[in-house]
Amino acid sequence: MSYLKKLRASVLGGALAAALGSAFGGMAAAEDITINMAAPDWPPTRIMQDLANKEYKAKSGNSVKVVLDFIPWPDYYTRLAASLTSGEKKYNMAVSDSQWLGAFVEGGYYLKINDIIDKDPELQAIFKDLHPNLVAAYSTYPHKSANYYGFPQMPDVLVNYYRKDLFCNEDEQKAFQDKMGYKLPCTPEEMNEVDWKMWEDFGKFFRRAKGDKLAGQTLDDDFYGIAYQAGKGYDFNSMQINGFIWQYGADIWDETKAPNGQALGVVNSDTAVKALEHYLSLLQYAPPVAKTGTMDIFKTDELFREGKLAAHIEWIGFAETTINKEMSKVADKTGFAKMPATKGADGKMIRWSNIGGQPFVLTTWTEGATQSEAIEFVKWWLSTPVQTKFAQAGGQSGLKSVFASADYNSYRPWNHAFGPSLDWQKDVWHIPEFFELLVQQQEEFDKAITGQQGAKQALDNIAAFQDKTLREAGHIE
Image (tube, rainbow, N blue to C red; front, side):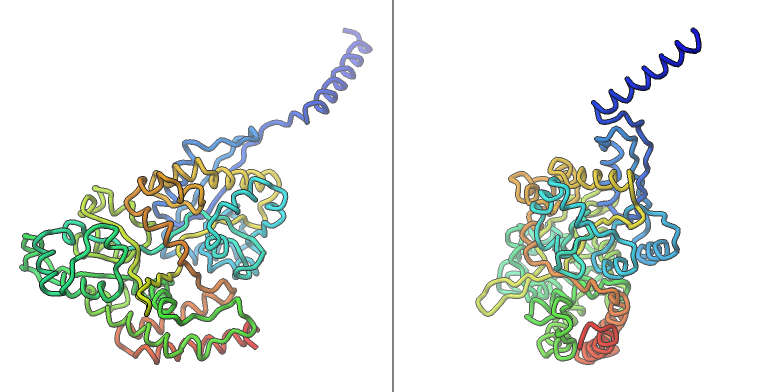
């Protein structure tokens, strides 16, 4: 081919390619994109990784791989914080506890997503479908504002795990009726109506020593009726105590009322003291580990799966291991119900509780195609079909189209307690100083739990510290 013919062919070929590119929006080559996500290591995130590996395919045609870096829960906050503040920019996304939002937003690490939502009808539809308490807890900073940062990854609530084989045993039923004067609850419907006085009765009744009989069997170890969150680490005792405080009609410091909301006289009100005293009074019926400040979410889960408890209060996120026969001695003996409540003067149940679960967020350095693909992954994850599969695999969905569906309660034995509990969820603070407040509060609560001080002293110390800290930070005038 002569030089002129080659030149003409090249020009014509280029023109044709340009025309085709214009007509069909361009033919960009597919990219290989990896989305690195920090995640706590527990069943809900493992299920998400499994579903993504098996089913996720990017609509763009890009080859997108979502890789979760699983970090043990006890180390998760410190390791994520270390990564974010180091400047290494390792993660494109992170599963984040809601109370971390303020610290990591103010630090410049979490991406504000309002503009992304405003431009995307699919995301707008998702947020309309989410339970509003989840949006407030998982997405907003300042708390309950119109500034959005997170998407729900796994909503979670505290529920009652109980031994059906014990609570429904005929001999135990008769003995309980004779001793307590009322029927021992057995069905999930009956257990849903349990208040804290009944919970105390379970603790008294099911306490047995090694060698005693329980449901016709001789025990080879001591056995306890109840357990609940009382650990010093991270936020464990606060998550349980906050529920008692709210159910009694008292409050923690409310950041939505800043700068006028007070800590003194609120955090340590007489009603809050009574609530904490009630919480502390139940410890005598729990395993001795409760008085050491180590009866946290992992210990109560372990004790229950080992068959050493009649009932305990735990996050739904741990339930999947409880019904796994390879991991639990009580896998086929466990029932689930709503967490115990406080019965009001009108006889109605007051069920306030501290929300668990986590949002996942985008980091501010995640841009371009990686950001676009991360958003597409979020939309895939929060689609009704995928959330249904997540629930069927043992997770929880915050989409009303999923948790309010006719089939939802059939997926897992605890699902009947999930949807109704969402209406009663509140959250702890989202402000940047949350960790400082939390560490001091956990320490003071632990001193009360371990018998070093009373409820009033603990709350007086907490209120004083919060007043000083929040004033210095400008949250209280």
